[in-house]
Picture 1 (cartoon, rainbow, N blue to C red):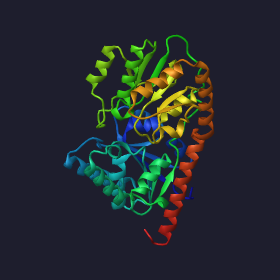
Picture 2: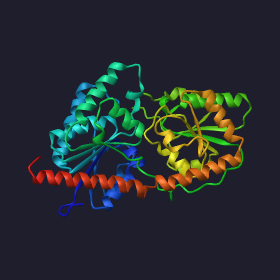
Picture 3: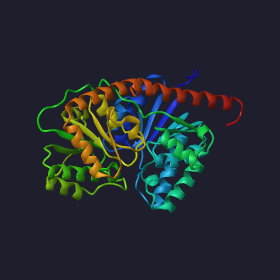
Picture 4: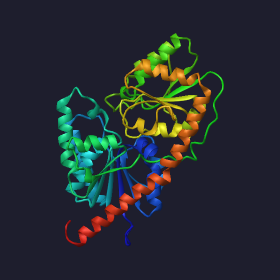
Length: 387
């Protein structure tokens, strides 16, 4: 880091719970490296925790699913005012709306360095039916990602290839860093549980997480008298357009095909109870739940899609199946439930991979290095009068 005043680093994330679950370790590392950390987010559950870390909390009214034009314009104005007041040296935007609105605000307020981090390409890029929406989104992204002093951060090569291949951003302006890291001490190796097998899908309750396919796979296995409990763990996330209606979730529970435990703060306890962890998602950035489960030594079943296949190697630390295919998903679950030795071997391999490739110190070192590089470049530009 450069000498002089402490560098101001601002994270812009729509939800405080997402910051806490996916970026707090990185923010702690930045704070410990000498950055003044500011968190701008919609505060619902974790405001006290964020402030308890010594971070400056800036509550926002930004809502992910809003389609009200006046509210959206007001959100951009709110960010412009925030950036002018806080005067960050680096802003780290996470996910689509913060990238769009935050980049515009950063450009208007001449923020020296901008990181636009995709947590996966998400609903808009996956919905092939709405071509107009996709074209509008790509056009808007191409404009804001093209601003000076900005870097696009993605979590896997597939997303990098998609963004660069479709002309959204030049490859020279992108970096691939695999997620936000895992504190392996928080997710210790767990023994195989006894009793009725527990199969867990840990995710937000969204259609594109493959929840519907998981329920159908559970239904098929129960019809075959496979004795197991099938558990959904996660919040609904009502601001996401792919959110599953609560009445549907409760209907599945009433039917007896799955249990829904809702949001859990004690995920290591959940993984300890699981014989198998499943994520049949349609597309991911780098799913933290698979890293957590692998760190706990759990065999995995996931879909052969970007993000999931970076973590799961087929028949090495789990099984990969085609997306949107409940028959293949049921077969993979049944295969691993019937083979304890395979689960144990896969689980140990998975933990070894997490330690070698995705531990917090390795990932945070890469991101902090990116912060420092951007700060140095922006300081050189300012000294030459370029900004």
